[in-house]
Length: 130
Image 1 (tube, rainbow, N blue to C red):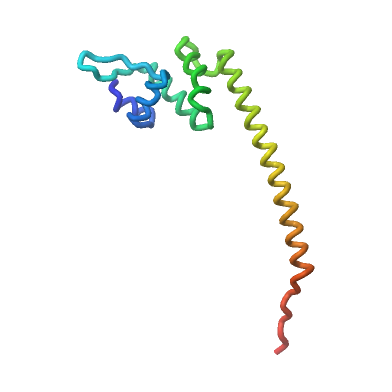
Image 2 (cartoon, rainbow, N blue to C red):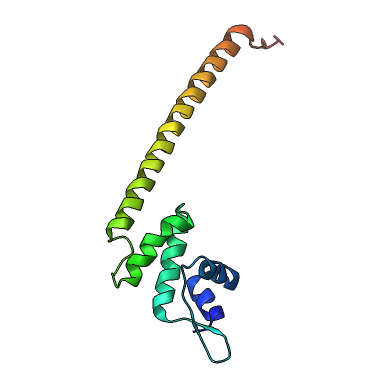
C-alpha cells in the first residue's frame, strides 16, 4: 500500500508517517518510481506506535515495542525490553497520582478552611420583615 492508504488505515497523516520513518520506526520499501510502499506488518507497527503515543509514551519508549513486533511476536509488549518500559511508565504514573493526591488534599483543606472562615466572618444578610 502507498503512504496515503497506510495513513488512512492507521488513522494518521502522511506527514506523521514520514516523521516515524525519519526516526527509524517505520520502514517502507521503495517502488521503482521512488514511492514509499508499505506492507501489512508496517500497519501493525504504526498502530502500535499510535496506541503507545496516545497513552503518553515518547518515541524512544516506543522503540522496544516496535522491535518486539519486528521480531515476529504477536504483541509488542511481550519482550523483556518492552516490559521494562511498561514498568518504568507505570512507576511514573503512580508518582503522578501520588502528587495529584497530595495536591487534591491540599486544595480540599484550603477550601474547607476558606468556607469555614467565610461563614465566621461574613454574616448572612438578614431577610427584611415585610
